Amino acid sequence: MAGARQAQQWLLTLLPAFPVLLLVLRLWQLSRQDMSTMLLLVQYVTPLGLLSALLIALLWALPLAVLTFGVLGRLLRLSAPDRFEPERSLLASWTARTPGWVLTAGVALGALTWQLRFLPTLLMLGLWLLALRTRYLFPDQPTRILLVSVGLPVAAAVLAYAVLGPAIWAAAQRGEVTTAALLAVPPAASVLLTGPVPARAAPTLTHGLAYTVAALLPLVMGAVFLRVPVLPTAAVELGAAEPADGPPDDGVEPASADPAAPEVLVGALITVTDTSTIMLDETGVVRFLPNGRVRSQALCPQVAGVPYSAVAVHGWPVEATVLDWMMPQRPVADPDVRCDGRAPTDG
Figure (cartoon, rainbow, N blue to C red):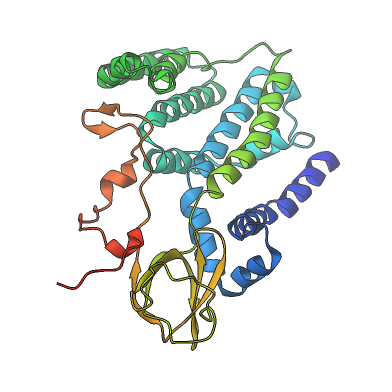
């Protein structure tokens, strides 16, 4: 009992520190490893904005962790009940204390936040959980076990291939092996892990996979979050600098040979004070722009990433989520020329 409790205490201690570590690493990366710039960002960047970006970017990870560890724990309990020791194993303890509604909520959240190409994997994990739970709760009902462990996965696989068949063929024709595998393999694999594995191999298999997922998931989450914007991208149009015997106070060299011509700076907007507009330009340099020179500002929309796959399922791109389909789409508007670093022309 001491081993499992000690591991839980360490986990509860380190778990809150992980998001903080991600936020600090994101600011450290954004500052280009300059401590003065990082301290400036910490002063002005709101924690709520950072946490919002973290939550939106990594919402998919919660159902992945819940369902993966749920499958492994229930597989261990069914395959080697004599080795299922919640007092000594953290995986067994988590499985014994996790109610079924948490797993159901994980499936529902994954259905909303996972891309279409990952939904067959979600279907596979959900069917595994249902079959393992049925075998554990109703060991004396072979008809129900057969229906849930064999009949339901086979029917789900047939339905999935009927819907995904054209997309699988299109992905294979385009040479998108990863997309084709993500769509084709999980429905067939949903019938493979609906029952126990050999008792001798179950503890090593389940704990080994659990440790592997626990080690890789934070790395993947960190790699994803380090690409998420945490500051708004803005374009600031600057008027002509006041005549002076030297460079402008903000240190920005005029972009045009004509000193009267306006110039536009594009970068991450940090804050606006009484005297200056503070920006982080595209090279990672902090600019303090006098408010007297600022003629106009424009909020630049985040550039959409180039899709990796051109495959769609009945018009639904495989990289889109259900939330993307449910949310109202932003109306298409003409791009602001200031976001391209050009000053607007009159007329």
